[in-house]
Image (cartoon, rainbow, N blue to C red):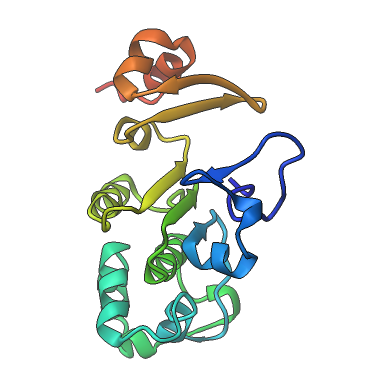
Length: 197
């Protein structure tokens, strides 16, 4: 995934966005169109709203609230006495891991990216909240491609297409239904995450 925003360049082949090699884009142009949320992201000392507006310094308060709602962050932000003006310690030490992840998702959404990469970025969020985030991502404006790196089968099941990697090699690719029929590895992942009552 780091090849898409050119954190690294390919040594063979090419990464294309709408038919154009990413190496043909100016880096600034490319970075404005690709949002990346990692499992562990950086928050800086300052207010929540300032941290969110790092995604788009010109965002209105209403736009910030909309992004926070889509990322399932608005309710916990509103529960703080100072709301969006709540001061965060360095790295967000005064909030939980799941809250940090949701703020970083909201920050990326404010960029209105053409491509949104979520790299295990809901690992500290409960499954119900993750489901609501995924539902909100499905409502993003047309033209936004969301790439999710995950180990959660529920997330895979909601995807249009799933790519299974094992030790850097592509093991399977297809819709969740296709992979249930054709991929032993996908079925193993699926079965390992089923809860028996």
